[in-house]
Every structure is written in C-alpha cells, then in structure tokens.
Image 1 (cartoon, helix red, strand yellow):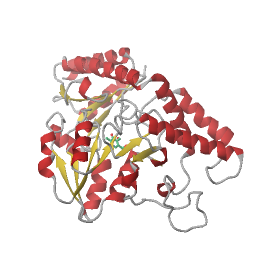
Image 2: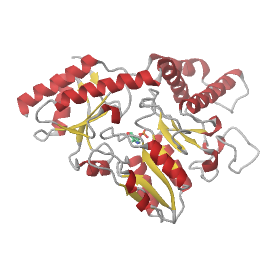
Image 3: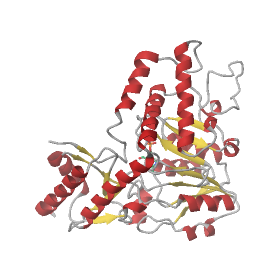
Length: 385
Ligand SMILES: Cc1ncc(COP(=O)(O)O)c(C=O)c1O
C-alpha cells in the first residue's frame, strides 16, 4: 500500500536528502565541539554554526546574526522569551488561537503574578484587530501570538499587529512554528521584535533544533533560562553579557545545526515563493474537494490564500479517531486527530472538546496524493457517513 504523509504540521517529512547527508557528514567526518577545541575540525564546525545564524538572519529579514539564538525547538524559544522577559505585575496580550507552547508557560507565570488577556478571534480563527486596544492596560508589556493557527491554518494579521505594537511601545513576539519556511517573513517589515521558530516543520530540518531571533534592545531586558559553559569567557563565573553566548549555555545541537544549515540552503535554492505556491495549490485543491463532499465541515476560512498549508475537517456523523485509524490502516494516509495542543483555539472555532481531523501538506506532497485522499474520504463517507 502506498503511504501518504499528511501530517507536516506536526513535523515535515520527508526531508531534503541534503539534510540527512550533511548531518551524516558532521557525525562521520567532523564530530568536534564548537569553542571547546583548538583544531581544524572544531573551527570548521564553528564556521557552520556562524553560517547558519547568518542564513537564518537573512531568511527572516533580520540584521543581527549574533542575536539568532539556538534552542531545541519553538517551545523552548517561547519559554525563554516569556519567562526571560516578564516580571510579576506585567500584563501580556495573546490571541485566542494559541498553542500550549505559549499558554502553558503563561499559566505557570500567572502563579507568579503575570497576567494575560486573549485578543478575540472569530469562529474562522480570524483575529479581530479592533479587539486589541480595549484590552491594553498601563502594565501591558507586549503581544505574543502565533503567525498561523496550527488547528485550522488561519493566518493572523502579523503585520498590522506589529505596527500596533510599535505605535503603543509594546514588544511583539511571534510563534512562527507553522509558517517559517512556508510563508515569507520579514522581521523588519512586520515589526517583529522576537521570532520563535522550530527547525523540523516548514524549514525541513531535523527535530531538536530551533531558535529565537531577538532585537538587541529587547535582548538586553531578557534573562537566560539556562546558563553554563559557553566555551568563551572561561576566566569568569558570571554569565557572559555577549550574545549569543549569554543565552546558549552548554553544548549546541551540532548535528541539528548542520541539518538545518542544509535545509536552509535547500530553501534558498528552491525559493520560498515556489514552496508557498506549491503548498498553497495543494491546500486549495484539497479544500475545494473536501468542501464538495457531503457530511464534512471545513473548519477555518476555507480559503488557502488566507491560511498556512493546514486543513481541519469535522465529520459530524463519524468519530474523528476512528476516521484517522481507517485512513491509516486501509488507505495508508497519515493524519492527526484531536485537539492539537491548542484547546482554546478549538473553543474559538467551536470544535471543542471533540477536535478535528487535520490534514497538513508539505512541499513533497503531490496532486495525486491529494486526489487519492479525497477519494478515500468519499469512499469512507459512502460506507459509514
Ligand atoms: C503554533 C505552534 N506553536 C508551537 C509548537 C511547538 O513546536 P515544537 O514542539 O517544535 O516546540 C507547534 C507544534 O506543534 C505549533 O504548531
């Protein structure tokens, strides 16, 4: 049976072959640590780490490669941002569509006297811009929100929110888990002060590597989450003030950085416009096909040009878990069902507590796979719907 991977919002698969090759080359031929050895291979690894920071900075329209901080994933980056910046008595705004990578740190911080409000979104996940101003308080420090909903794909108006933050002297942090690598992002143009990304989704890198790009002025106010040896300033026991060292205690994930480096090279060569067009065309085809089936509800805007490459469906007469099982076991189609770590997004969309079945597409999916999946759904609905 053909296997069709439609869970790219969880992690992208397959990866470009260069990613695997570069990770293997590091493990087999380099293997050295960075800043901890006085020999050629250690310098070579240091060069790749620097090159990866520079590629990421260029990719996201950010002029400070030294302020590209490596972390294990976007969850860590968001924890660093929220816990490193907010102090008791501070107030933050988030959208009502956030992933638990934002909400769980905030629920921990609430116990320390940090409060938050949710900017309302409508039942398609669209942010109500007019809902921001009335929520501002004298102690509001910033806005943190996702660029695209991981439940239904709806894009949030990052550029407008960025301008709003600038006008109100608030910091603006964006969770780009679902858009980095699939949708062009320019931190300068979008007035983003802190961009949190994960390497293993749209950026097509391996798991275990992510990062935070943070404007120097904001970084000055942020405390590190983890501190330790950096291979630099070894004469002092105090935490270094220089970036990125200040926020990167301990050995970096070098196989991950090598893999991400190759993935970025692939993205640069292919071009993000080409990737976006391809993924959007597949999403559009699937959305139109799903909307034409009886017994299916599309969750979100139903418009591929207003979303990332995610489609969430609800089958009122079928159990979502059973459907995901049938797709996998009888048709080889891999999807995800449930709440996708974003309970409040489902409350906003009206799909709580049952959740949805999510289909998420990547650059390596094909038109044939979309059509085959639609046929499988039609067949299942005929038999069970
Ligand atoms: C919007 C959003 N934020 C955060 C995350 C967490 O990503 P990671 O597990 O790579 O930290 C995800 C991934 O599922 C996501 O979709």
